Image (cartoon, rainbow, N blue to C red; front, side, top):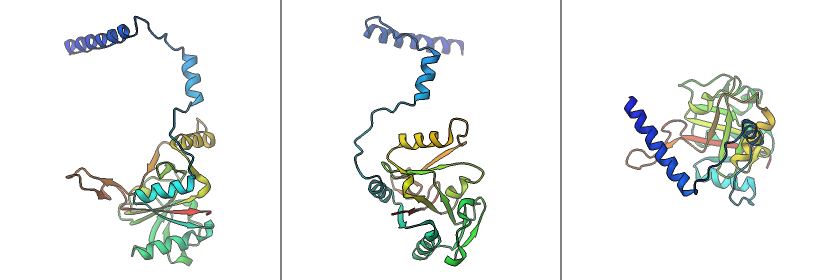
Length: 225
């Protein structure tokens, strides 16, 4: 083990030596802890691609390309009926689990039986909100927590997400900036889940299979056209 470590150190020194030689013998001065801390606190954004598109239109486009389906409604009161339409059109179960923030909607009027709890492996439909959505990639951003269990979006075969249009941001950088602005450094979630359409894999003979590691279907109900 000692011999292996010495060989690794020797290889490292050889690589660094070649870099120093290419730089003409000059070395970059080490950053001070204060400078490193200031850089991290500033969260500077790197170069970004052209993004002068409309965020809502871009999100629709990218989400559909990921096999996500979309519905758009005027207000939150119409969410249960929108979910019922989707379930009926796809011949899916009208039994679902949902996050607590959505449990107060009038689900019985839409013919949907809702359980306000974390999903288990026998649940077929999970309904959640989302912290925000990323227009550039058609991605949902969900935060873990006692009232926002990740299992509700991961275990059921069908995941339905409810999201105000106002929570669509342009890019990943904007999503993290929004999280820092609203949560601060001391209230970050334990996990952040990014959902870009149904679960998929092409590991076997490069054949695309949906639902390999999560939901077969992802449906988003956008509030506020």
